[in-house]
Picture (tube, rainbow, N blue to C red):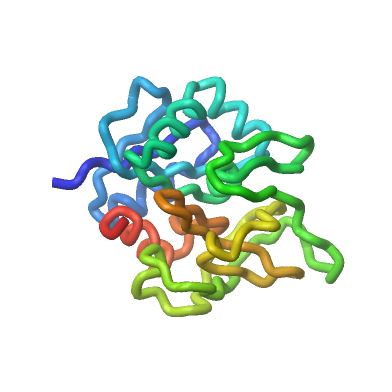
Length: 206
């Protein structure tokens, strides 16, 4: 029997949609509001909305920062970061003020470029253009649409990490894979069939 998915909750995630998605997929999960809620697991989901500094402050204050680093650097678990939870996987973000992330993946979070007169935040459906094959996108067609809502995105990250890019003004890395670290800038729980497939692939195949 597969273990439960541990979903980190610091009060900034969209848990209604996420719970609904897991229930549709019959994926057992547990929402963890403190480190004491964690059980032995090989799957962690880190969702987040709002500002990067507040998100990282919440992770640190509730003891999740240290726990996540311990579990992931030892490769005892795999993680899927979603939206701000994805951004938190990187070294730092420039949002509001320079704030350190979990530093599990090299890269920095910068504001989306307005050079091409695009609207910020980037809200709505957009394509993910696959840059390499990865189990996270198993059986999902290239250039599939996913739902985005963000003003910042990772830059200067290795091509070896990128699974997909998305065009919005300049291209940005919309998903990544590095060892046991996975992340998506879009919201799979709001992305209908393709988003559900992302969650299913992470739980069943990684």
